[in-house]
Image (cartoon, rainbow, N blue to C red; front, side, top):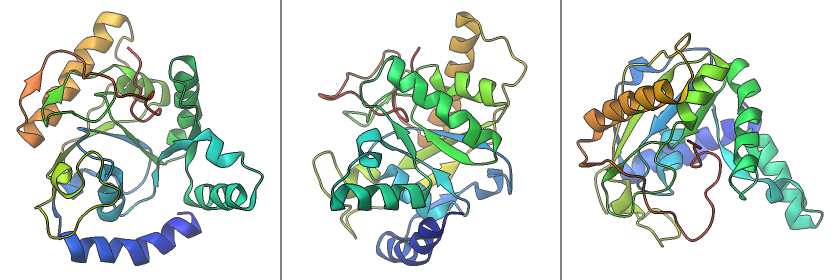
Length: 232
């Protein structure tokens, strides 16, 4: 586990657990070692923060590539912090740039890291669960790793869209992990990818109890980062 990530686990992690007291279910489904993809619903920008708080292993998360290229003091500091956290750089342009970022995640997964992907492609605008894009399944097959369904409940209340930071004592947080889904060896044609993605979204819905919408979520004003931009 990278040093800065370890420091965060020892400082920010306990503070988050004290302030929000999240309920966690299904930790036994997280492997002790080896790569895996966390595929979850997306209600708030705080989702990854809470995942990092409760998951005992390192999470390789996505960060805008410009944070790694700045030459000013602030830019160099951002690069130092994100590199120290083990972040994966990604172009915000979407499309082929986002797919290139997925390619960059394959070595991390094969090296035994955990990566978070949001199949809906963006945060839910209304709390419902939207149709999943196929990128998470494509990445799992390419890297030969399982997908662990994740259900986040209540994060949109403690940090709704527009809020800068999570607000303590404003709601109950529940995080549920489902049984790993192993798609390795399955066909990767368009129809098969769609079927596997629908299967994955069904498992996520079982964890959250959200109403399911059989269409893609409406895009936000800016292109999503790779953890959200599942092409397909």
